[in-house]
Structure formats: C-alpha cells, structure tokens
Image: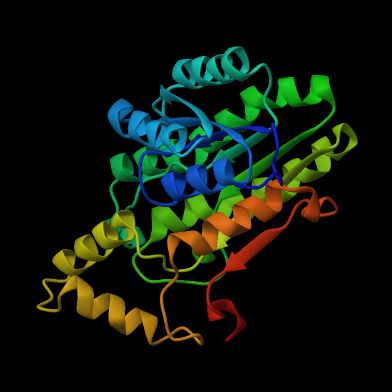
Amino acid sequence: MTDRLHEKTVIVTGAGAGLGRSSAIRLSEEGAKVLCVDINADTARETAEHISSAGGKAAFCQADMSSETEIINMVKEANETFGGIHGLLANAGIAGTGAAHETSLEDWNNLLNISLTGKWLCAKHVLPHMMAQKSGNIIFQSSICALNGFPNLVAYTAAKGAVAAITRQMATDYANFNIRVNAIAPGTIETELVRETYKQRLDTAHSDISVEESLAQTASRYPLGRLGQEIDISNMAVFLFSEESSWMTGAVIPVDGGYTAK
C-alpha cells in the first residue's frame, strides 16, 4: 500500500463487480478511503470487506443509479462517514445490444437512464461539496464506442458518447473551482458485463460461435493482440485521481490496446 491517494475519499459506483470492484480495491491500495456503491448491497459489502481485510479504509452503500433519492443518500453517506468527498468514479452502467431499428424505446430509456443520467446525477450531487472545498476530481467511465462505430450497440453507444461529451463540457464549468473532470474509454475488457454483452449479441444472431471464440476473435483485432484486463483500467483511475495528472481535465482517454490508433 502506498500514499499516492493518502486520505482522499472516493465514491466508486458499480463497486460490487468488474471494473468498479477492481478500481475500488486499487484506489484503496494507494491510500484512498473508498465508499463502495452498488445496486446489490451484498456485493458492495463484499468489496468493502475485502478492502478492510487488506488494511484499507472502506464502507459500503446500496444505491440504484436510476434513483436520484438513492444517489443523494449515497453522497450524504460518503460525506458523513469520511468527512468529505474528494473523488467520484462514476462507473456503474448496464449492457445492451441492438441496432437502431430493433431497439425498443423501453430498452433505450432504461440504458440511458442508468448509464448516462445516473452518472450525471452522481456528479450533480457531489459537485456542491467539491465546489465548497474548491477541489475535487470526477472520473466517468466511457468506452471506445464513444470514439469509433461498433455494430448493434445503438443505446450503449449513445450513452457512452454522451458521457464523453459531458466530460468535456463539465471540465470547462468547474475548472475555476479546481475540480477536474476526465473520462476513461476502455476497449474490450474481460469482465462479466462484457461476457454478458457478447452472449446477448450471439444469441440475437443465433450464432453457433461460443463466447470464448468470439472474444478471441475480438482480441485478434487489437494491435497488442489481447483483450484488456481490469487492472489496466484501475491503474488509469489511480493516475487520474493522483496529483500526477494535475494538469489534465476534459480528457477522454482510450485504454484500448491500440484499437483507436488503427
């Protein structure tokens, strides 16, 4: 454990699994106090207990990213538990497949409500605390879908593209308060969410290809010849929360094995 994020309090949404869990653990290893948030209270608790058992400081909170009331309570919990809020990693989101002509309005609204509006609401309610202390750091989880076109992901791409756009916009609004806003745009990372997305896509196409075979095909398209791992994204989160990136704001950073460089 090091002190790059010593005594910084960070809220991590979607901390019960995948990139959120990996990032929460990694941030704690660098000295951050972490509020682990998830719609599933049990998995949020498990992440917080894992951090505590390793000597870190963590608490957990259940919150649905489609509920403003629960997000407000999440922010209140972080402030009361740790006495301040220095960072937000707005990571929580859901998967969804489908081209424009086959995506229902219900599915569209549900995905944007959680993966875009939920992120905005998290920022909306932590910003007053950060503005009052004249410092803060917000990281949104976006995707290379915001930067490149990918088939059959219209709602997912809309959400991730909008997240990239509000990152740039919010960076200009809050720079005078010494609040930095950046986004990470991961390529394909081997998480359960990604596997579920691939399964949905293969099922929709009535394909005989397995999820493993499909992931291997995707890996072959990356210049570095592999898919990303959770630690690749978690390390970027640590960097963006640290003072090492103190002159970075409004950036949407691909962490993608060279995919967007092609």
